[in-house]
Image 1: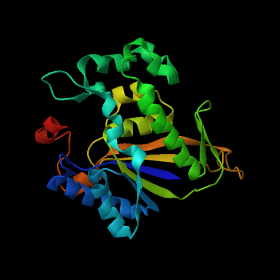
Image 2 (image 1 turned 120 degrees about the vertical axis):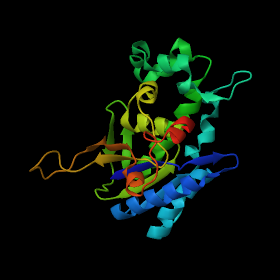
Image 3 (image 1 turned 90 degrees about the vertical axis):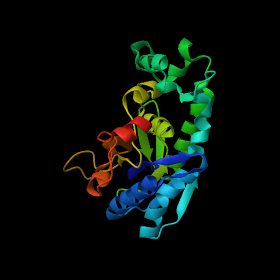
Image 4 (image 1 turned 45 degrees about the vertical axis):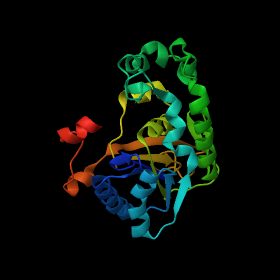
Length: 250
């Protein structure tokens, strides 16, 4: 099975919607995804995510299915609020961004949230419920997460099935770190997602090696492309790494 995770387009956060640029980004990524033949389309229940998914649904005549647990509002406890300053995600804070990358945090593995630096944030109350919902979602598609092995036990094979999920950057960090069994702070410290960019993950439940006839009992989650925005380049839309205006807003 192939999983296409797409961050929403350039947003207006209040009211929740897309800018004109975000609408063009949504159309651009839709044309690209339509070439791949997406079977199911999902989105967070935020307006900006659903608006980004809508052009793809129209091109493929697919019904949009919503996943409330992927709404970015669930991450609000992870914003730092300092008097007189705009709230920011903890992983963008100059001090905590360094903490996230530290070896002593990485070495705590799945229990990273018990690190003394994070006691005040209660990460486990925010992130663990999302991870549980993710496991339920993928189990419903035939892939049961075994976190000890870092693999997915295959109960129903979907070799060619392709699903698109439209959601958010911070939620995407939770989503990808859990899907790949990479500690959230380590993933967050080193990987970003651009607006309307596409990350593709393969759950490889095929034969074990060339020449084998028996499929695997377990599937691995493998990254094929990360935050890819070549559709924007093709359509002449600005790229975050070449546009100072967008980079400064990002």
